[in-house]
Amino acid sequence: MNKKNLICDIDGVILHNNDLIPGADGFIRRVLEQEMNLLFLTNYPAQTPKDLQNRFYSAGIMVPESCFYTSAMATADFLKRQSGEKAFVIGEGALIHELYKAGFTITDIDPDFVVVGETRNYNWSMIQMAAKFVAGGARFIATNPDTHGPHMHPACGALCAPIERMTGKKPFYVGKPSAWIVRAALNHMDAHSENTLIVGDNLRTDILAGFQAGLETVLVLTGVSQVADIDKMPFRPQHVYASVAEIDLF
Image (tube, helix red, strand yellow):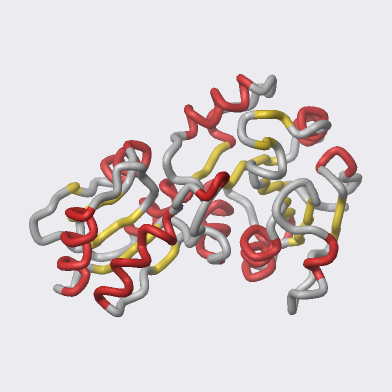
């Protein structure tokens, strides 16, 4: 197979929480030995690439910091293409860091954007201010549409819901299943869709995003989606494996 680039999800594919999925270390080793261009793509915006590198290291996997691309990074890359330079942000330090790096001012005074990521410090005041700014014309941007994580931890989509209900305005979701984040990831790794694989565990996010961006898609069954779910979708992954350990495409 003539594929030179690999985009890979993390949770449910390589790790369960912080535990290595059996065989994932061997899979990564094979990818690196083949000198493929590897990028781990995650919707989770609250960790920096350095944080993710350390998470992998703790699980026994050594990969460069440059191998990680997050929805926070993609959100900053998206906003750099828009007019405006001030943002009101609901999110953790990793998202704020990426916006600062991109040249944005973080403010609660007349922002051009309301940017929502994920935080455990969500409160009434944040909802009120965000809704006021969006109703007043600020553009509503969110890192990802996920509604919850493990143990029903509220995620970005859930945090956006009250703002959306109050204002009647939907956010633009940067993260998967948006094809935009995949295109941004391809640009980040200097790759093209026609020679790139995407590996994920979720038909509705990873596989749909890859399909919409024109990548060859690989579903693994160690996370969200199972074989029975495939027939419920109007699209199909090109390949299905029990885990990344069984992928034999390279």
